[in-house]
Image 1 (tube, rainbow, N blue to C red):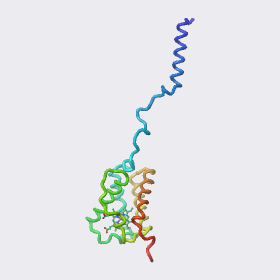
Image 2: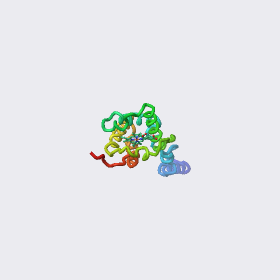
Image 3: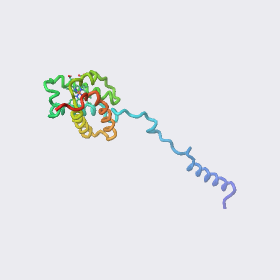
Image 4: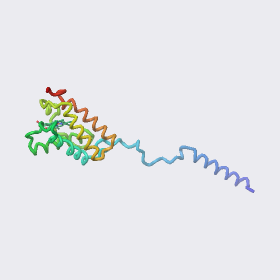
Length: 164
Ligand code: HEM
């Protein structure tokens, strides 16, 4: 038979356990909470400079050989092509929240008079998309980057369609 004191201790223990289980104060607080961390930049989520660099290298040079766009780059020397790539790497790095400093001339000035069409702009988009897939960039990040590049269209395409 339980004495009154033992019965009291047992009852107190049960009451304590009940409270401990149900009271949210006893719920363990995770040491790391995703929400408390600052959101990572698109640059970081894409994989940083190596991935940005690879995307530029796997897309822009394709324009040099594609029959739809090659004529824009005729006569462009190796050094200028290298510089074009580096300018685009810095620009993509900067526009996605990375630490690079862009050093290109304003896009609308550089492309003024080239008469790049929407169709020719889309050729580049296709190559960029392929490069993103090749380098395993997440689908959310792909969408974010493509939206940013789409936002540059008015600076690049300055005529709707070339006169035939
Ligand atoms: C989002 C799309 C594009 C971006 C971000 C972009 C960016 C750039 C940049 C940063 C430069 C170098 C500017 C400088 O020298 O300071 C450049 C030059 C050039 N881009 Fe683009 N470009 C885009 C699309 C295109 C397309 C679709 C074409 C043609 C099909 C094109 C043709 C050229 C040419 C020919 C140059 C050299 C212009 C010159 O130095 O006279 N670009 N572009």
